[in-house]
Length: 276
Image 1 (cartoon, rainbow, N blue to C red):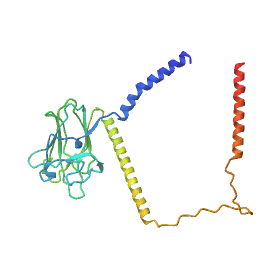
Image 2: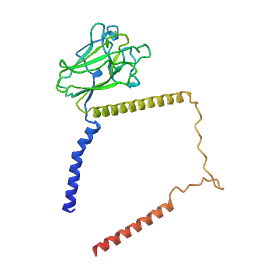
Image 3: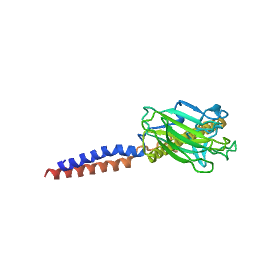
């Protein structure tokens, strides 16, 4: 191997090593994602008539799936506006390495209750400092994505009021509601989408396996017992003896042997020429 070719190979290997971390970061493979609904909360309070006065995890306050307008969120947190005071949630994020809190805000839909009159407003505070305050949020609008800079913070406090017109139907919800060590919202969304796709694929595989097992059980239960098939009698000659099938592939072996001989001859000629 010449020195030039060797240098090219070393440079290519070095470029690959330097590029791999960038590719991992762009796909979100190394990104930390922690859902608010999976964390222990420091304190929280909502309307006492809903979920015993505590925000719900991964469902609305009626125990249904979280739907914001026409978008479904497997993960999230749901509030119910409080009477005469703020609904809120506080979570300790000190020394966890978080930089961003990302969520989709909206009012939860329900098949059990009429919540069409909902109106809520959120405020996000980090260590007492207001980082974001929303306008009044109402139903029949796509959820709004928000991000909060939590880098270096200790306590994230989320407050929600009734929008100024009473608490009826005020089911304010945060879809995803996730902390990340990234400052790139687009990268976080891509990582979340990838995570959702993986979860969906796993659930689909599990359901398929379960259905297959169930069908197999049903077939086994209903299968009738049949007699074992009898072996087919061997063909016989005129003298009554069974004929023997020729199981040894004579012709293919001959052809293969010839091919080996030819190949060996060619290799011998090439070696002889190189010696000259």
